[in-house]
Length: 208
Image (cartoon, helix red, strand yellow):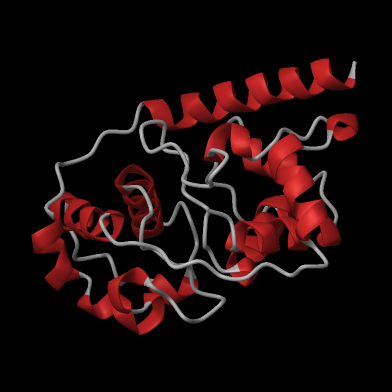
């Protein structure tokens, strides 16, 4: 029964997230053009998207589809990121596509997971929590954490544990709501404890 519940949860979550991202369309990005357009981004996200600050996400290696969605929603206010208020106001669709293309071509660096949290984090990432109908993260974000660019599922591998944990807790509290009308990230995160979120975030930071 547990295996069936997990399978059903995986199928449901995958379907809901696919619907949320399937209709996304965007301009064709030019990575070479994007390199000059991300100069201002380096202050927070680091050279080539390799942020060294745990609170700021690494953008290197992230899929262009996902980056375009997030930048457009930050620009429109659908996703609130106070530190980025106004920074994208003068960026048109082509600028955003170019920046996304540039970051997508960069290679992300891995962090080191907390040994004490690896077992719990790996269990949730690869198997979910059947008793709570929490689907495995790997179902959408891939076993290696590289995501699914075609479906718009973000890459997670190498992301700062602090940033990942903060976003999961923001989804859980309802502070962040841009995961579509099906709310898959909000549904999953509200079933996780702080320790489970921290373990999952730690595991992801060293995932390859």
